Image (cartoon, rainbow, N blue to C red):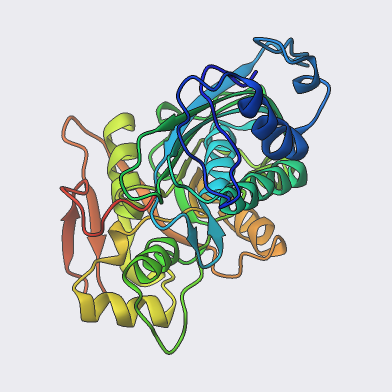
Length: 346
């Protein structure tokens, strides 16, 4: 349950402060008014140190992640929605249906209580839309620096939707690589919000749950070999990670990768490669070539009009490479993101 060792008083100026030695009463008030009012369920109402969970399968998947994005609100989402979808998406990439989440909050003194409540409600709305419950959590306050920082850790538990493994070691030569949609929008949206940049066509983050898309693929009995969401490091880094883990070359057609015109134009002006920009609602799926068209149809039926086959798996090798071919037939090798094109955005 939520740790009450930290005192989080609610003051008239509606910001959170450290109040040394004031006891747990004010802490409990904040927990009741902000967290329990949003996340209330049979597990949290026990106010116990843990939750007893019923899992319908012995094929359990567990994941954890932390989120420190600034600003905490951005076009298309906020840090709370990002935390929930990010953790659910990690489970979905393992072929698991998310069931339970925990969340830990590290709040900077001076953070707006109103903003905290909005973020918590955003988390609950996203979890509820996906049939997921929050079953445990923790709250801590740190000394003031800017008064704007909020850090969230979320862990998730899910159960496999299929009996077969879904991971890089299942990839075979000749498999098709399916991209679920256009890339680059999340990173550009956060950058624009952080820097106060104004563009003719405003960017909206693609932050969204991938669970329905993965369910659609698996329920059609498509032989999904591997899935990977395109978060930190973008599409290029995800491809390199998969190539290295599978020990397979990957051959990618640059012209098949969907990038909306506004992202492409601004990225070119700023000298940013969209291949390395983070996404929070996109993934790649490795499927047999014979299943590729059905996979595309399934994704497009879910509203992913930009879904496309962007390449194929090559040979097994001790030096796996990702080769990107442009419209002139020239290939270049992709590498992991080195350093940051953009400040941290997830």
